[in-house]
Image (cartoon, rainbow, N blue to C red):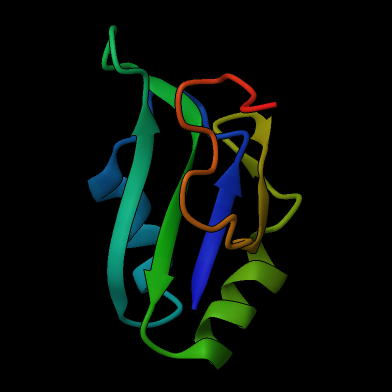
Length: 92
């Protein structure tokens, strides 16, 4: 199950976030999204967990919690499909 994490403090590393989610179960993959130019965190990321029940427990326990003094959002990631948010322009 893929999980969205929003509101991440900029100083959080992927290794640290991985360790937090591993408290709930095995992590298949994790990625903090970074700005293309500055390589700085954009404040959100995704974690894919092996077990759906463990992912749901992580969501239940972490959503709305304070992390480094910032309230984070943790929920099921929505699949936007191919081509979503490519380049920031409309094809209309």
